[in-house]
Image (cartoon, rainbow, N blue to C red; front, side, top):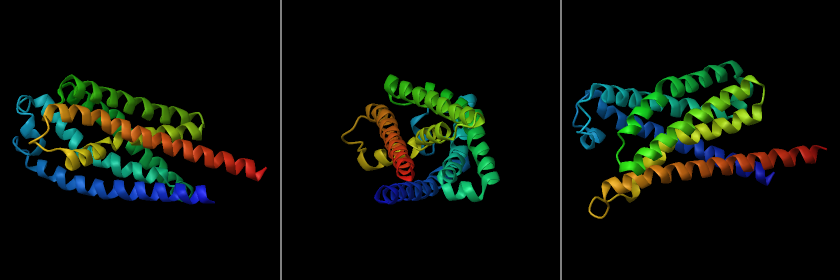
Length: 220
């Protein structure tokens, strides 16, 4: 009972936090609707901002990532899954197609020109590869009827999706231009965000698995 309550609190807190930060990200993203090349993050990318291919992928990523964040939120509610199976599948497809067809290719290109030097570039490329692998695993496993692997892979996929939030939280809390080298901080932050999110995902998977294993033993 205690484990069940603990898992519900963790999931509820995580869902609420991601929802709030997704809304806040909409405010950040709104500044790019003017399509000016000296706005926000683009001020740090003046060396590539005139490249039409890079800029196109940037806008594709910026304007579609919030869809991934919000679509993913609905996928981890057992109640929502039970009562809205068809809607769950539709939203799941939106999430998967958004990642595999839109964001993975866009982020790969953006990653090649990432800030943070080789540290930032390798971090973003690895994030992108893991994002694709976890999402594909989730799709293949559910087609085979393996709901456990599907759910775990979706948790890991969503952990990668939410690195965008973790990255910005760390940057806003700890970055100080007077004391930190921007490129070094950026590169380290990419890896730190990935480590934190995958660690949380692993913790959730382990806790959930332990809970259901205990429930099965108890029922016997």
